[in-house]
Image (cartoon, rainbow, N blue to C red; front, side, top):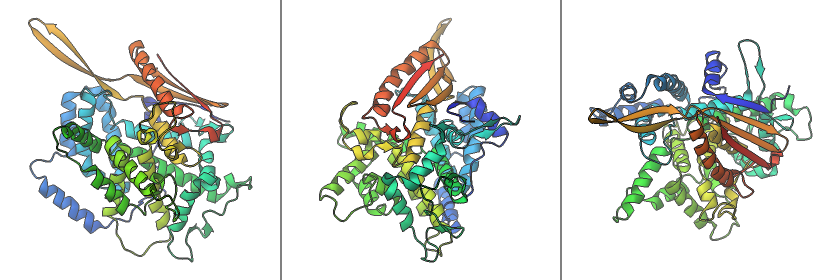
Length: 477
């Protein structure tokens, strides 16, 4: 039975999680062969340098409990456990960053920015949304929720088809092929060539090799979703640096940052994407490297996606046990890290894509458009990130007089209860169910802007290869 309609909510996540249906996929983990000596040395130095001034994760949670109500803590604590438990195998350094991320997230939620929203709850719930779309789940009562279907084919199969057969994914495949080990079994697993499937094979969806690619895609998408917003602290520093620029000072040298990426990350898949989804060519235009360099520089200044991808790659590379004898499947595991970094970057790269041009006009860097047919992983993450507004808490302040005193109160609550997604024909319908009319009205105001930025004919996201030519978005109560 096809399933072109799905509903996402925190309650739905809790039910599935308790039943083990949304446990993190880990068939290929650990993805990086870590050198335990390097990691131990780093943790020891980190503890020494921060002795007496560094807060533990438990200390930070104590501070959060002083500032928010019990309902928020009841939601945050299990999701924090979910994130930290997963990162122990996938991104071991994350636990050292988590306390500072929590502190920065509090500032983001309780400050006076345009958006006062959390990321601690947001990231694991984005990962849940991806799992449900791509994998579905089986409820305890026996009811089976099928994976999301788009035009009679599961979304996950559309994703794998694009990776394996679409001409615009050629450079992605070519990069994977170049991650060779020994000619005796390069690009092979279980004795089979990873690209042996043929598009004209109508039975390919039932083969073990296609199932391998399904699992690889789902795991990589989950990794990217769980860490896609780790670049926010960097973006905060960049904004502060911009404010200080008027005083002829700066916290970060953007040009040096971009040079580090170009010089040291030119062999990573991330550079292929920043190069316009092209492996660097011998005959590319003379000025092209300069265009790419400027895009990277602006990516560090204007986005949290590129700093997040940079951090994710760098911290995994620093603790890799390298050089070392490569195992039979090292290229598959390392490819997860490479591929996830791309989606982490591209989920927030629309400003660089558009440049100085307004919505409706031709973008500055059209080759950076996130198109499903050339980058299904980033497209799926962008969609899940856009939808995951349910249970995102925001700070609401109010002043009231009690006798002679004026009291400022802080309410910490989500404005969105659930989100639905419906793929019917050539249209995708996304509905946000808000808690009250005021929040629905405000959400609709932002959705109009998002529709032009993301889903218009010149927007950042393109799902037309799936037959989806129009996205309809709405907020209601």
